[in-house]
Image (cartoon, rainbow, N blue to C red):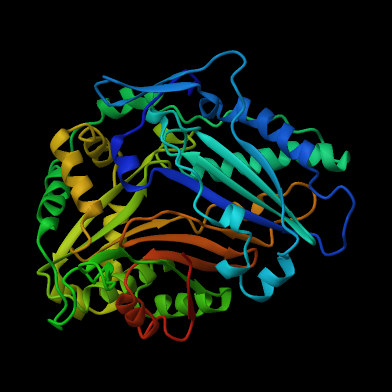
Length: 458
């Protein structure tokens, strides 16, 4: 079945429960003060041109829930839709050079795009995409946000690469003109293929649902003086209020290309065949479990069916999280290499049939209630890993070179780890919302301690 564009998209409610928007920031350096460097008119016009071809659903004027058997949204797309919010800013107080020298610490980034973007909720009339462009003395920052109803992060990256190729012709006049391609994000076209998949012999959703259902148990640190929810939140007090839970910050944990290479050599020695991100994920799972007496600890990997021929032409929203749960004491005591092999097996055994079975449950009211409770629950020890470190963020080139930095401003739930590529030369940035107690475990972990730097990112 060929992918087609339509005015209909499938938004699994579980998507918004975990992450309602997909946002990314690009910083481009212009140290030589090139004339016409990423001139705003071309950026704006090519953005709209690419949007209309590649992701027209982002221009929808209205979306509403529909009673599909598989759940979803219907979008109202008119011939001449209003343009999404596209804003130009100037900030002479910030420079890309200073950001580079400070490893892009939050305090050095332009606040107009570093602050969390506006909500992109399709059901309350929010715009489905926003674009902010900031001109600094020596470069340009781009902040782009899509509603998860429109596409996932993989689709965002591919859109940005398409957009930059379209704009490159207008900036350089030397390249061959690039016509934007369709980035199919309409899940309804392959839904018959999913529904035709046979159920796996042992339906994984039973375990999947069990993990969510049991995640409501309370959790406390062994130190009884700690507030019971401090695994993922900290307690705040003031002189006139009762203690209340405050949201933990997002930490950016960075591993250089050299550090990743060293971890790779460790992997080759102790668990060949395991991916480096899965070995790092095992270390994170240990660090989150080691201080908790909670009887059960959870791990979720964002898995994709894109490698299957059925979904090969589909460019977004084809992943789902597969959950595992183990006894906490086993995770904290298990050798990191052994735990990594468990995670790797969880990934490689992910079949289209399993994918279909889980997706087909997404409209279950019971499932959604349990998922929402799981995401909001700050007490159960868990790590949810979404590995985007291999996505082509740094292939976004408007004709002036690749970005100096790509940053992730994800509004992630507690315990979620987003892996991004650190730089053009490699490395990994991990964005993770946890308490400082977990961070202490990470920086002292045998696998990571010599290769990781940490900053508070929110």
